[in-house]
Length: 281
Image (cartoon, rainbow, N blue to C red; front, side, top):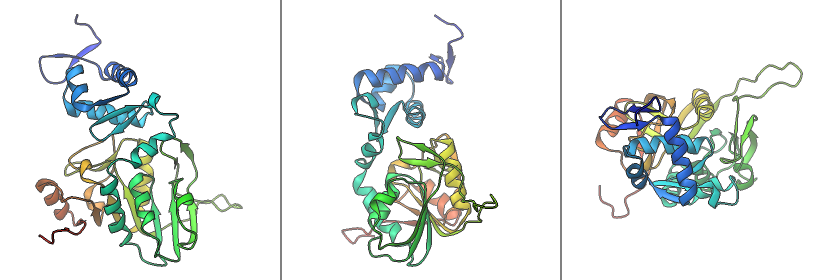
């Protein structure tokens, strides 16, 4: 029946309002445990892009774990802290390639800001030959994974803790204990892992607070490297982090599609790719 709980997404088929659909979608994922985007699109009668947007937001809100191609119910995992561990297993090969490339941008003795995420953790694993780094991060896993011989100093930004992502969310800053004034912070390089890259909307992520923190890291860096595997191409998430021109590098595993590649070149972004094993151009 038609009532105020239905609306149209631009065609003749009546659809549930997003709030209602998202609630039903979350309940269904909880019921089945694991499901694909295509199966959800067929079940709810909406496009795959609509389902992806719903899953991205439900993931950001902590109702499920977004995976490449679908979603997994948090109920099938011991706790929400496993969310990051699930992500560590996704696109593992691509992330390691990106991590190795991004580590090559880090100079000994430099100051580096690193945001939370599994791709930036891959960078840390490739810094073993670096020395005298000053690292500032909101990634709570980095202090446990980085070797003391790499760092001169390691700082973790304070704020609220997102247990599911094992990260802090708060302002980029530290205060003088006596005056309460924020220190003016600057880095030589910002390594920023994002959830989506688009020619139209630039770099984006699902969580607003994370987007604000990432944007501030970018604004305080001399050079900026965006880290994103190819599954993030031609997507747009809830919160914009920065436009394309804000980055110096996009470090990825596969060459971007033609339109995105053109937009990156037009905005002065250098795309860094792993070497081709075959030696072909």
